[in-house]
Length: 117
Image (cartoon, rainbow, N blue to C red; front, side, top):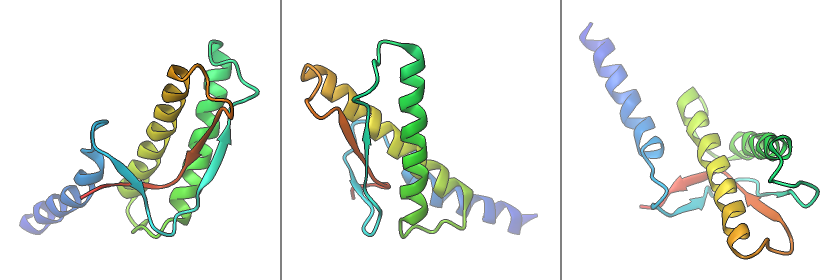
């Protein structure tokens, strides 16, 4: 029983730093991660279906970058948080483009992310 509790505590300790990351914390791409450009030039993000389409594109690109990153992917939570953080970063870039009156490229750069130390 004690071994199980220690194992769960270690598991949470490994997963928490990435999962506890806030929007205010800066992130950087994981070294060796594939960088993918995701375009939304063909989408009108004021339309719910187009927003969902972009979300699907971001998730697919995030899965690809997190799979190719040099991360300990033997644990489900590491991969889950990698994908979640990469998608959140993609949406942050889209929001930044909107404040710049839609950046000309309407493209975001997606990579597996990790918190800065």
